[in-house]
Each structure stands twice: as C-alpha cells, then as structure tokens.
Length: 259
Ligand SMILES: *Cc1c(COP(=O)(O)O)cnc(C)c1O
View (cartoon, protein in one colour):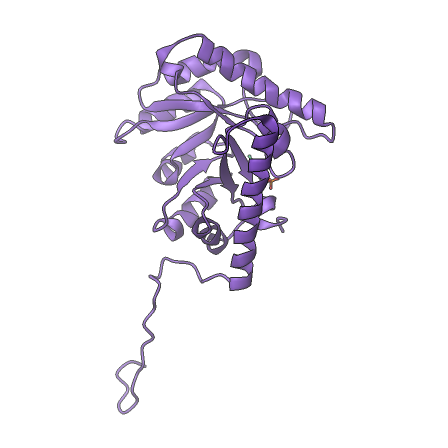
C-alpha cells in the first residue's frame, strides 16, 4: 500500500510505456529475426532465378493471430510492412506498434461499418473488390493529408471461397476506384490458387499481372501508379515472383504455424 508507514515503497521504473506489450522471449524473438532473414534470402534467390533485380519485391508480414510482441520482433529485425486480416486485430495491436516505423495494410475483407476504425491504423487497403466500398473509403479519407492507398483485389483462381473482383471486371473497377478523390490506386492483390499444381498456381498469378498490364496500357493518368502486384505467400512466393509479384505476404514463413 503506498504511503504505509515505515516500509520503503520501491516503485519499479518501467522502461517501457504501458502501451507496449510484454517483451518477447529472446529465443522466440531471435527465431523470428532468423526467419525474416531466411525469407529475404528466399526472395532474393527467386528474383535471381526470375532475372529480376534485388529490391523488386517487398516483404509484407502477414500478422494475423500473432501477438504484438512477435510483430515488434519482426519489425525490429527489419520488417517494414505488416498486413492484418481483421480490423479488430489491426486496432488492438496498433497502439502497441505505434512507436515503430512501419506501414500497416489491410489484407482481409473490410466491412463498411469497420471503415472508420480501419482508417485509424491502416496505410493501405489491399482488399477493395467493389465500387461501393471504395466510394465509402474515399469519402472517409477526405480529411487525410494524402489520399488513402488502395489495391484492387482480384479473384484470379475462380475459387468460390476467394474474395475479389473477376479478372474481366477488374480494369473497369480499377479505373473507377482510381478516379475517386480520396484514394490512390497503387496496384492489385490476389490470393493464388490453392493447389499443388505449380503451373496452375502460376496461371492464377499471371492473370493478375495481365490485369495490371492492361490497366497500365490503357494510359489513364489516374491509374499510372497502379504498379504493385501483391501476390505470393509462404508456400508459393517463388511462383509469384516468377510471375511478377512486387510484394509477397508471409505469415508462417516468419512466425511459424498458426495455432
Ligand atoms: C494468412 C495470409 C497470408 C500469409 O499466409 P502464409 O501461408 O502464412 O504465409 C497472406 N495473405 C493473406 C490474405 C492471408 O490471409
């Protein structure tokens, strides 16, 4: 009890502000750092094989279900981009990562009612798959100092379980999204076909590249910045890089299997 007569009350001086998470077990933090370096090597080798320059592909940490302490370890080891699937997780971990330089992307479906919360923490929404959501994002981004970065998510695999606009409709949607004043279209995102057939997986990634190339070829100044191809995960990043990925989203390769 503070002020109790006689007893010297020693208050521990906390070195970390209370919003920071508990420090991570150093062995676990080391493993995350090692996995990040190994993944960067994997990306470089894939670039070499594809005849693409090192630095052509960014690594985004797919952080769903990971505690903020694990994400801190990955950022401190050199990670610069994180992606969350759920707004709830983005909002919960945001304050705990706010002191570290990084950018946060939404890589899961976004519901309109979660837009205000998402915009408090997200630098980019990769999962724009319809004009209604884009219009709301644009409206809500009006007060931002710079437009909100977005990507159009394309369903390149035809799997019913995957979100995203059909490839045939993607160029029109991209043009409409890029025309919205609050948004800056920076590229396209897809989740590759879930298959052991590498050729078929590659075809789904190639489809995203074709969408992007068609949009750029149309020559609309509003879509000239839509260069990113966010595609490839822990199991298929080499295939995605061979097909032109500029950003791979890695979860298990960095953090291990999700519980
Ligand atoms: C989970 C997830 C990833 C990462 O998947 P891993 O196989 O763990 O690398 C990438 N993108 C999206 C959209 C995800 O949901």
